[in-house]
Image (cartoon, rainbow, N blue to C red; front, side, top):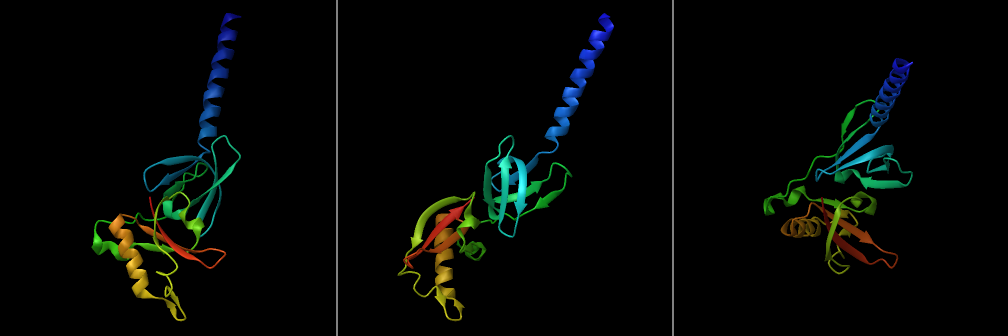
Length: 167
């Protein structure tokens, strides 16, 4: 009788440990460019953003692929590289700075100061595309401040602004 009770306890303990390991193996892991890891469940991935829930929660969060190095899917173990880290080591790296025009592409990045206003951006969009002189000026300022991204936005009153972002 005593052996049967002990055996039941051992089986129950084994089942709990094995079940916990199986459940935790289903967790997806998002590794950010800054080294931070987010654990949860990936709901969707598109060209620019990842929608996920944190482990044990139902609220949906969005993070830009720009902020993410890789995703490891818990179910399959598949590792997907989402973006390469942009290195900014000096003024010569100005061409590495990425200009963004969609605020969703900045989720999970750290915002910095505004670096341009409507007057500075008046010629940013010409009829033939982007004014390369303005683009270079924005990128050079971002590098000077140590940022990898520039977000150019237009609000409801057609006011244009540029802000810098980094990992």
